[in-house]
Length: 356
Image (cartoon, rainbow, N blue to C red):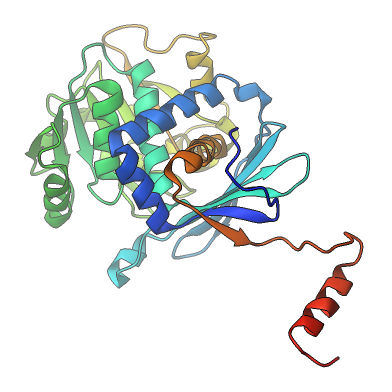
């Protein structure tokens, strides 16, 4: 991991929302997605090195707050993230997040960054990376059901990484589709606004479901899904939240990130605990096959996993020296004598003229 130009280990580089937007604009959205994908592929191919645990989740009636930790033995990373679908009614984001990287040897944090925008980028990059290994050959058309905050990132990731140039959009809120079409205008994608889920999936090589409501929904029914497609199911990401009819799962070859987490949170929460699924990292390392024939339905049941955030955090940290888009935060106490923390407080009181 590259070092940032700061000699003071007690100053932690911080990437604000404004800094993140400037980094994206300087590098370019599609180049950012390609770059994050390179880091994702590197980490997925060394998957076995990482500490892995299902994320720590605190569920409420309105949503969920989660911590997502991992380490490769040298660097530790975690993300704080929430998911509150009702927030949009109050003018708030459904998802907000921040993340930290730390040096395992010292325990000192080496990066603190916003991850609301970065999570959207890494989620899209992960989706497209999985599709690269699982989609039908020659895929050019994707249906996307759910046109909210994640939709444009997904579209551009599939364009940059998979060569998708045709998009069929549907959302129960037509204004969301209009927003998505407006934002993607002029970016090299042929877009069709569809009147229903059924209409959207017609002729699609890839179907992406990315809805937000926290409920066991049936966005796709079995009769909508023909043979030979790849399904990118990313909306179902917590207990009690799904998008696909169970019969679609039974017809599909299912690929997941980390089974102990996906069985709790993904589409496969509808299936028996011992139902066979395959891990994406094993496809990427060549240990197992991905798509095996043209008529097969492949399903990436993605719930998001900490190693993906780790990859995105590594990527951002490695951009800071070149872009200069970060601030140094005075976050760590630095007494003259590491054993004399109280003495540091007393000296600060004297320098400020505070009487003891």
